[in-house]
Image (cartoon, rainbow, N blue to C red; front, side):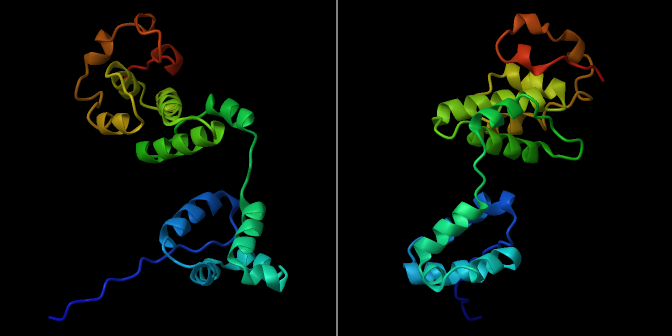
Length: 195
């Protein structure tokens, strides 16, 4: 059987949805490493659809032919710069949606914390992400268990939460110490509900 040549990863397309611009650009920058500007321009134009390509067509020809100029105008058009103070206020109201998986909620928390602290170091981002994840997690018993295990990164509760299922430990919820015993993160998580 003949060996196959490695396939080039398929890039996602961008149709002008402002909310998708950061993730599209992250993926595009990873994909275009090692390319020259002409190759990057060709691949970028090949990924644009709908409103995004219409926006490019409306630019002057010198902008459409220069990768850096085109990227700058696209970034100005589609990158949403929210005031970090407003994003930080919104973090206090983050709640896991009923249909949202724990992984999806963790991703959403991580993205919003990065927007809230654009110049924050990794330690600050991790601490805030964990705090807001634990506060907004719908499974309070799982959040408590994660807190008791001294979670240090946002990935740790994701490994613990599927293990902590209240039906496996029906009496454990009744034996959990009060929130006053753990004033750090737990006091901000909210009341525990028994199943």
